[in-house]
Every structure is written in C-alpha cells, then in structure tokens.
Length: 178
Image (cartoon, rainbow, N blue to C red; front, side):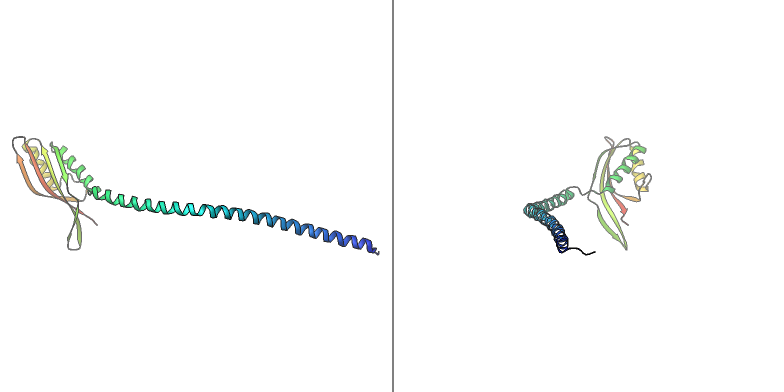
C-alpha cells in the first residue's frame, strides 16, 4: 500500500506539530519554574540583610547575657555543697536540741594534700540552747556524728556566752573534690 504524497506530507506536518507542541509545553514549564525560582531568590536576597542584622543583634545579646551570667555567678560564691553542709548542720542541731541562730560561710577554696585536693569552706555557726546541748553539738561536729556526706569538720574556735547560753563556733569543713 502506497501512500500518496499528500497523506505523507500531512503525517510529517502532524508529527512536527506534535513535536513542537511538546517542546513548547516543556519550554513553558521551564520558564514558569525559572520565574518562580527567580522570585524566591529575590525574596531571599531581600530577607538576607535583615537576617544578618538579626544574627548580629542576637550575638551581641548572647555576649551581654554571658557577661551578666559571669557577673551574677561572682555574686553567689557558695557552691551547692555548702547548702548540703547547712542541711547536715541543721539536722545535727535538731538531734542535739540546739537552735542555730546564725550561719555564715565563706567561698570554698581548694587545698591540696599530696595528690588529693579538698574543698575547704569556713563556717561560723551561732547556736543557742542549754550548755549540755551546746557541748553535744560541738562534740557531734568534731566527731562527724550525723554527717550524711563525705565531709569532715575541724573546729577552730568556740566562744561561749553563758548568759544566753549561746556559742559561736568557727569551723572549717573539708570535702573531697574527687
């Protein structure tokens, strides 16, 4: 079967038209995608200076916050262990029937004994009660009775006022820093 030249020409024209239609469709899609990408790039470039400024501001705020944190940490020199020591001292006071009326501590310092480093805090404890109870409290501190933590105390001085009776006890608390 032989096709006429006209039918052959129509078939060629239709194939070319279909190919051009497919190419136009692909090109139109790519142009739309490129336009969308250009628009997104333009928006991103518009936002970039603002985001860079915001980043610089946040870095400045971070620097200020770190400086403030360091300044505030210097205001609170007592370590967490100090609170735990206080709890033990109050528990010992309860067991000895004395009342702690004043408790002050210093910032812990490190003290080396050979290869071992200890944390040393100076405490002043003022207690009131009867003389026997005060002496029991001092004895309990010196011998370590009632200590829940791995620490020990060295009593440096005791001032007893028999009018109250009250006692002011100056002591060092040693804790192993591991």
